[in-house]
Image (tube, rainbow, N blue to C red; front, side):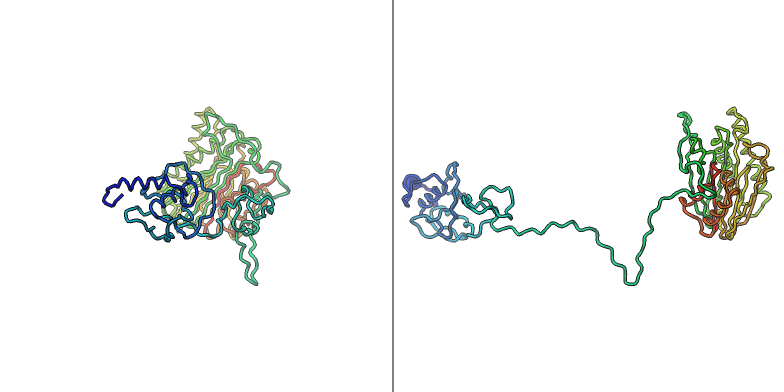
Amino acid sequence: MSQQGETDRRQEDEWWRQLYGQPDPGGREPGDTLDDRYSSALTALGEEADGGGTVPAQAAPQDTAPPAAPGDGRYTGAHPARAPGGRSGAGPDEDDAGPPDTLRLRRPAPPPATAPRPWQYQGPPHPQAAPRPASEPPGLPPGWAPAEPAPESPPSEAPPGPPAPAAPAVGSAPTVLPQPTLTEVAYVGDGPPTYDPEPTAWPAADPDGLDDLVPDTELDGARYGLLTVRTASVRGDSARYRGEPRRDAVLTARFGGGDDALLLIAVATGPRTSDTAHRAARDACTWMATAVGRSQARLSEDIRASRRGSLKSGLHRLTDRCYGRLRARGEDLGLDPADYSATLRCLLLPADPDCRIRLFFGVGDGGLYRIRGGEWQDLDPWRPDEHAETEDSPAVRFRFRASVARSGDTLLLCSGGLAGPLRGEPALAARLTQRWGAAGPPGLPAFLGDTQTRVKGYADDRTAVAVWDA
């Protein structure tokens, strides 16, 4: 084929005859391998195989594909070791010199004669070859082995753990963390009470009256200015064992904002023999809070002006209205007025830090105490003649007390279930004086634990409201 695209018929016939009709000049019969075809093509084109380097003797795979057309520029097989009748080949980066009218072929450089690559096939092992070295990975077919022995891997070590704590400085005492302990309900007196200290049974529930369910325990707290408040109400050991609802109720509310705000804490207890005692106690707290909230502006003004007479008469009137609603509700339910009633004791506290007046009012049994200077004081002594009318209904006498708090005072309002053991067991009052006195206000869990301090012979519901003045 000429450079102008013309074809010489005789030259083309000679080319095909030399490619397929002539035996190999080396005296070998023409084969059908890629090497033979490549050598024959180079001979026909007047080229000579590259003499630089040799190819390792390997069995060439048989190729069943048809030979590539001459001059298509494709690599057609492995490079032969030497082509007869030609010159030594050029380097791998030089074009093979040939006639000007033929297509030049470039053969890739053979791989360098280096050590066998890892996992390279080394030939079948000798029948009497040494056993496989220990460094050879297991599971390889015969004759396969790394070119070099694999370095021995260091023994496996456990993953590094967290860094060790820094050693304390010389001369300094090591830090000892407190060990966690299980919290148990404490008791005072001769011995532990008979009942289990933890809840045992829940009250029976009515699917149509689930609003009447009362939780076993209520806990609350707040801080306003100089005041810190904690409240806790717990079902008694007897009610927990028998599966009865808690007859005590507690309500905390804030009316207004800023220095004009009033804090109300109401505690009520229903009669022991009534199945609706918990409802009556809840209604008493709710209706009392409603009346105080609607009169918040007038009450705040009277407290700041220290109008004791106006406060007593006004709160007495609101309390009477609350009990009037309780009697009306009992009649609607077809109950005796004594069965739908409750004792009611309240604290009314101004949030203004410049006003330290603390108001107590209510009806019925309970306790009002103060811890001042480490001394336990009873501000509402219990008198038997006031509670001689009936056992299950509260006395009709209205109770009112206005006091001025001092820094460091602790004021305690409680239901009859806590006032009873405080009067009957001096060790309980001493314990609460130590816990709630100079130590300051505890956290909610600690306050609950102190309220649950048990005394043998007292198993009623307990509700406590404590106020700390900074």
